[in-house]
Length: 248
Ligand code: NDP
Image (cartoon, rainbow, N blue to C red; front, side):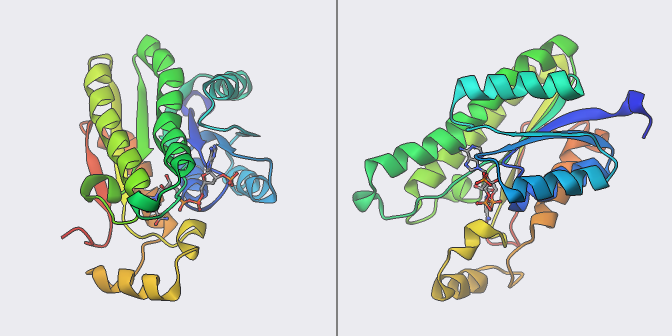
């Protein structure tokens, strides 16, 4: 793609799993990529190499999405290295599962701070520039748990439900300036996050999926890249499920 047409996209949680697949797919489609994880890791280094192998420029640094100041600093550095941000994918997320009545208060806070406040922090920080330039796309990685709720995941479901409402609200606020905002809500996807499930829980989960398998990070990345592209130019404010039919 000619340099004049390259667009800079930020991917939070790009160091591993779904975020990595998204960063690499967007790089393959001609975007330059800035991504963050929690820490400086070999995984983050590997993502950067995969992104650069697609011919894309890449900036990465650790950034705790729950820390507003850290997010502002990250975005400033990314724009200094790569140029104005056109796209944002909020993929950083954590789980801390337990029944609500047993849930440690700090597990509630950690999940809301990372998944919901982290999404707010990045949207707020890049949203202003998008408004000024009257161009941009935001894709928030939510979850089917945020649409239907999931037992043992009150914190996670509430955080993702919040992300869905934030997505619709921001879509309304930014549409007039030509900025689109959507969410991708995955079902069970094979990643480090779902590796933590017991064999029993995994078997039960697969049995509940009409397509009888977990999805792949690439399948989430493909939908995200479509929403980022001009082909999705008339789509905003949507929560699109990629879930093998689990919610049917
Ligand atoms: P993983 O646990 O495999 O990876 C999580 C990613 O988020 C890592 O890159 C991690 O960085 C980053 N991260 C976590 N906390 C922070 C933080 N505070 N600041 C910055 N980065 C952070 O998760 P998945 O890839 O499976 O999930 C990605 C997204 O998809 C999440 O939002 C998740 O809720 C959502 N999702 C996942 C599903 C699944 O089945 N896997 C289903 C539905 C939704 P680091 O490498 O430094 O730890």
